[in-house]
Image (tube, rainbow, N blue to C red; front, side, top):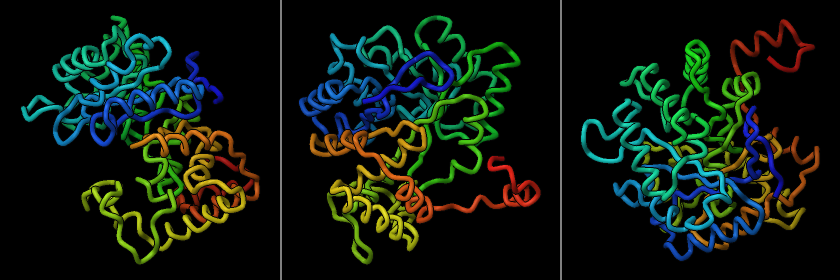
Length: 337
């Protein structure tokens, strides 16, 4: 496992992050322990969770399991968690208000059995809380030592840039990285968010790196998702919904992935993750069992040729549209906007 600096910080993280959304849900505690041990033995040091992860509406389960699993080895991991999603049914049990953040950071620290959180994400943009309120309380958490670095997830580009500008204006701690949906079947962040991150020195973590399992190669055109698959459990209005995945273009992407996987004698998942690693982002790899985890970790060994990268890029290409197309017409010699 290789290591990279997280954005413009001096913090080194492994090239694959272990996602623990399954802990306490699809994965029991014994298996969760085995997964963490195996990941650490493979050289990984970056573990991600969230205060809202748990079976049904049982928020906090993943953090609680992870806290017990990491007991005695907490110093071996860069620990990431999040705040903002619902953790209860009350009117103040969600969002990015001062009240909710201060309540939830204490709950996360308690469940994780730690004195500090290495990377604290705001989980999603909150239209109901003033951005100044959110950023000022986050800055206070860093200054208190309860949080070491700040990150953002599921924001638009203008929202990220507004937050960075406000932090700079008031001397508050900035976001150092983003966590966004990114895969061969979901490249939308290439339009504005990835260029913003490169310009502002933000690290990039990719959730859903296998498209909710669609890029694993187990789905075929004309077939329905098997009842025990992750995609079968996704609601029609959710981001990784079956209807969003089973498009003509996405099946062409899977076909391109399959050809490369066959030539290397590896899995579809390894090819899909290797493509992401080549984009200089950190895939968050989750798993329900040890077999899935082993396959995901093997992706760091795969080296894709320039021809294979071009093939995947062509199959999954997204049109940037206006005004990017217009600007490139004016300055065709400039590769980046």
